[in-house]
Amino acid sequence: MTLAQQAAETRVALATASARLGASMRGPTQFMGRQIAGCGAVIGAMPKCDFSCTGCYLGEDANRARPRSTEEIRQQLREIRAWLGPVGNVQITDGEVSLRDEGEVIALIRYAREIGLVPMLMTHGETFRRKPGLLERLMVEGGLSEISVHIDTTQRGRRDHFAAARTEAELDPLRAEFAGMIRAARRKTARPLTAASTVTVTRENLAGVADIVRFFLTHADAFKMVSFQPLAEVGRTDPGLRGVTPDELWARIAEGTGDPDIRRGEGWLGHPACTRFVQGVAVNRAKDRGPRLVPIFRRDRPDEMRVLNEYFDRAGGLSFRLDSAAQALRRIAGFALRHGMFALTRLLPHLVKLCWRAGTLRGNYFSVVSHHFMSAAEIATPLGQERLGACAFQVPINGELKSMCAVNALGLREEFYRAGKPALVEA
Image 1 (cartoon, rainbow, N blue to C red):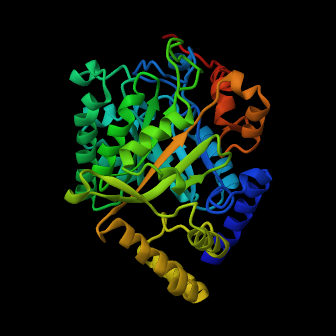
Image 2: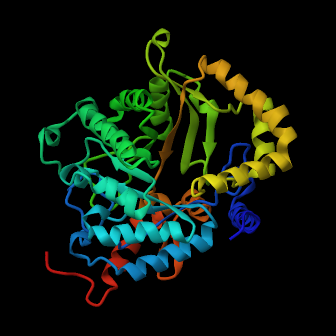
C-alpha cells in the first residue's frame, strides 16, 4: 500500500468514527475521528488467567474456556483492521495471553503488524519475570513494539513478597523492576518498545494514585503511559469493592503531576464520560521538588486550540509507528511539502513555547489516561446508552463489533466463551 492509499483509507476510517459522535462530544480536544478511529481488542486468545484479582472482569467460566484457534483470532484482527484503518490500535488481551503457546503469541503479533495494526500485549507481567528472554523473543520474532503491564494492589497471584503488598507504594520496587526489564529489552534487541501500565482504582487504593503518577513520571524514559481504570461492578469483581468518580480520580492525578489545573490539558477519546487523557512532557528537575507533567496543550488557551485543530485538519491520523526509517523519511517529506509553512509558523512556535513552559529540552513524552468502564446498571441508563453509541473501545463478537462495556457487563463474554464445541474444559 502506498502512503497516498494509506492516507485515503485513514480519512475514511476517521470520518466514519466521527459520524458516530453527537455534537456535544465534538469538542476541541476530541481525538476520536480526528486522530484515531478508536481501539480494538481480541477475545478468546487465552481466556485463562493464573491470577485471582479482586477486581476481575472475567466471568466464572473463564479458566475453563478453550482458547480460540489462531485463525479465529486472525479473523478478529482482520475485522478490527477494516474498522480502524491503517496503523490502528489493537490490544492482544483476554485473560492472560502470555500463558498461550509462545509460538502462537508470536504469530498473532506478527500477523497483526503484517495487516497494518499496532498490537499492544496486555499482561500482568509475571510470565516475563518467570521466563527471562521471553519479552525479547516477542520483540525480535513477532515484532512486538508495545506492551502494557497491569500492576496494583487488587491483584492476587504473584508468588513472591509482592503478593503481600497492601499499599501501592509497596509495589514501586516491582514497577521499577519492570522499568529495568523494558530498558534492558530495548538494549538487547536494539528495537523500540513502548510501555504502559494499567491500574485498577478502588476506594481502597485511591490515596496511592498520586504516588503512582509520580513514580511513572520519574521513569518516563521507560514507561510512556499510565492508564487508571476505576473499578466497575462486573465479572468476578469482589462485591465489597467500590470504584471512584472521575473527579475524585483526577484530583489525585493532579496532585501527582504537580499541576492542580492538569485537566485543562484534557483530551477525549469518544464520549467524555468514557476516556480522558492528558498528553504532556514529564520533567524531573531538582528545583521542581519532584517530577511534574507539563501538558502539550491547554483547553483554556485559544491559540493552542487553534494549532491543535489546524493540525487535525491538515494531518489527522498521521502516524509513524509501523514505518521503516525510509518510510518515515518519505512521510516527513510529504508532510513538509504539503504543510511546511504551517509547521514553521504554527507548530514550531508552539513547541518552543512548550519547551519554555517545561523549562528544559530534555523531557520525555508521557500520557495519563482514565478509562471508565460501566456496570450493567449504568449501561441501562440514557447516559449509558449514549456512551455505548460512541464507544471507542470495541471487540469483534461473531462478526460484529461490540463495546467492551457490553462484553464485560451484559454477558457477551460468557456467551462467546460458551459458543465453542465443546467450549469448556474441565478445570
